[in-house]
Amino acid sequence: MMDPKTAADAYSRLIIIRLTEEAIAEEYKQQEMKCPVHLSIGQEAVAAGVSLCLSDQDVVFSTHRCHSHYLAKNGDLNRMIAELYGKKEGCAKGLGGSMHLIDEGVGMMGSSAIVGGSIPLAVGAALSFKMFNQPHIAVPYFGDGACEEGVFHESLNFAALKKLPVIFVCENNAVATSSPLLARRPANNIFQHGQVFGIPGYQVDGNDLASVYATAKRAREHAASGKGPVLIEARTYRIMGHVGPQQDCSSGLRTQEEWDQWKDACPIKRFEAYCDEKNLLSESERETMRRSTQLQIQEAFEIAKAGAPAEWIA
Image 1 (cartoon, rainbow, N blue to C red):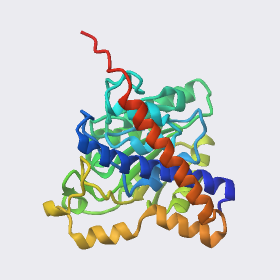
Image 2: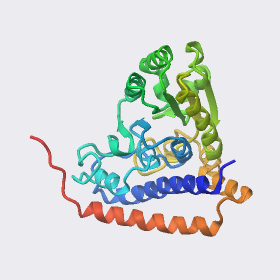
Image 3: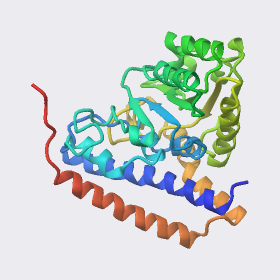
Image 4: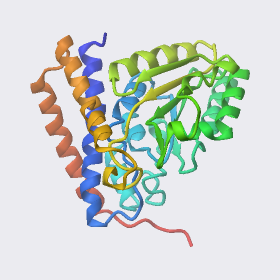
């Protein structure tokens, strides 16, 4: 079970992701952000639970849907929002936009819009850690669609061969853009893909932060002990559409019944219930945290809008 301090840290990471992305969805309608945005609303517990187990020196590599990974790794909110507005104060100096967040200072080593593109980069970082006897871990985040890319399997093989300190984290939201998982593959068993390489795999409820945390903690202990990589499949659901500030039930890609069912399984509501059950974090404490976070987000948008435009290199 979590202790109160860890629970407060976990809740802080959950709400900064959720409230920031809700603000992005609202502000995006003003058409001042000139980059596409891929939101993680509904998936927050994966990034929050994994990042709770990581040290400041551990590194993460992300995807086009990267806000949650950056914020969960204690990324700078002001710099992230400035990046979305294309301002030079952004974490990529306003040149990367939403899909290309990077901040080496917090271990966010980059994110790529190429599906599966960050996976081998994380393996390379882990190889460096092993070669220089550094006790750090590399974490590539990727979606279920990336598991159909050859580089995923190649990376598993190499990481297992060299016993590299990698935790492969698949955020399985059961859809790649608009293609349902079972229309693309014969079985829903991503966590088993590492077995042929001798990689232990875990399947976890990605909307249950406590379970994600416990699984990631075990995975980090395994990888850090020199036993090699681990594969985690976290089953979750994105409430918003593939890209943009709206949900996509009206498109016919998902039914309203399915959407309602997953919305009720909100990871934040579930963690709040867990905190109440275990007497870890009271509602008054949570409300204070939410108010403080809202003010922080409001200030971040004000700073970003007043920032200087990116300086493009001719």
